[in-house]
Image 1 (spheres, helix red, strand yellow):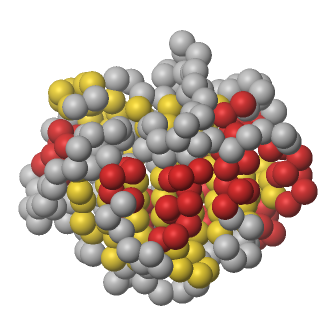
Image 2 (cartoon, helix red, strand yellow):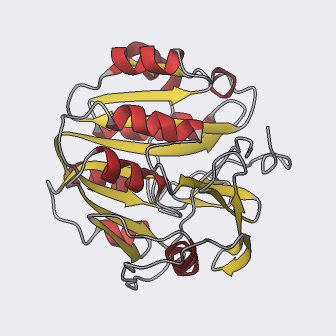
Length: 303
């Protein structure tokens, strides 16, 4: 069994190139270590699920995918993504994902909402090629581009997406330039009603980065909610926080009920409580970017 890992996602700030998605893959992935652009990737099979795989880079979990059952979401924060996606209006989605790795969420959307059109931006071309070769990217309606997230955003049309997901990490922190007011404003412009922006960030004691990111979202979106493990929310340990933002009402009551009853419960914070959490924090801008959260030395291990 693969034990839950703390952090996931990878991307960075590099010039745009294009990588076509292959329609073929090897019949059997090969476990092992592989050099990629941002370090050394490792591909590990989950012994408890015959065709499920963990992808990590330099010890940081990037993705967990079950090739036989793409609706299985192993990581808690990805399950929270799925809970929010499930509450969008029925039918296919136009989705943009910034940060892809093994494309866990795009596979989920393709399986649960047939006919969806999805585009993934990921800056690590070597990792994209590894996933294509070993795990396959034969996902209906999915395209992958090797590009920096901010550069990619600039190529998209307004009102072109029902869902935008940012899950782009360098080591254990969000890739630079994706949490700013300028990037958030660009993302808001891509969403058509009642579209949702989802982001995965990390933070630790005092939640200084999370508070500023909250302030950034609240500056742009009228509706924002946060989902996090209670220990992370109280600043007792470093971990993931999922944020959802929209110009339309968010399904806070349904999400709160769902996450509270999960195997690993999460708190759902919204409304006045969320604004209180943000406090007097200033929005992040391109000209005023705070230092990224600094994970403890043991954050890359298991918990």
